[in-house]
Length: 377
Ligand code: SF4
Image (cartoon, rainbow, N blue to C red; front, side, top):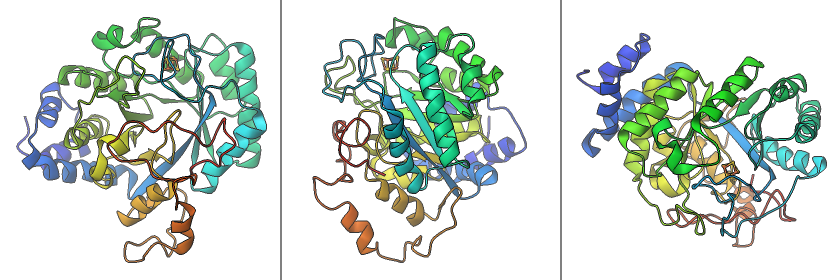
């Protein structure tokens, strides 16, 4: 065991492999130790990523109507959540949505579609979107997230220029049967391996707050380490009304920080993204989490609204970080007040950037992809 989180950071910087005992010590640490934990994890974050924050932007290409039964998902079979439901976006709409995120600073666009997995025709459709995006924005990474892949599909995505493929492990193998009965943990591992072997950068992460124990968390994080995922999004359960996990509020902001720190200590050089649900679960600790995570989604999520995109960018600047790929602007300083243009963009409840209430139920997305309302970017 280690004497302090700082000593553990020293060990990890020298290339040590995090043990299960170390992992439990992180998760079981007290609130009094929280700032020491953040400071130590921040050393790993800065050693590998400096003060850059990678900004990612989600485009939900196809929403709802899924035949799978993942308990955490508002798009699942039988979900009564009042989410937007639509079939495939037209390519020009997908490109326009992605363009909004890119204009706001995103260096990766994540093209997501609900469903167990794509047909070959679906893959062709997404491949054309990837090609269009690459033509318009050659420096931007494109990640596809289309579910379980069949033979040849990852290869086709790679050939059209996709950079990465996302497929989350979500939780431990032991707990998987409790969150989904229509596919299993092994299916998920196989798809990540398939994407990796086709040359796509594997992106795979977690959903926490579903009732898992610390042992499940450690198992899941170590499975991601074994998988050698290049990026790990950590989602915090958004318990949509109308889903089996409705009313499930099991996380505290401090525990969310411990979970992020566990991932950082286990996988020091891996992109760690604070993903869906960060607003309602990390709440006022979001800026602190940036000292551990080096990546986030800007603006809205697949079926729910995040905080205004400009608030994400302000949080990054105010905390002394810079958006990856962009030079810090003269406004990127906590000593400057927000410009009128920034504040007016998000004034008023009907504006695209109207703030989601922190700590409240998920606000169903009513803007961006699949609507006639401007996206939150
Ligand atoms: S997580 Fe994906 S596969 Fe599962 S219900 Fe939601 S959209 Fe369907």
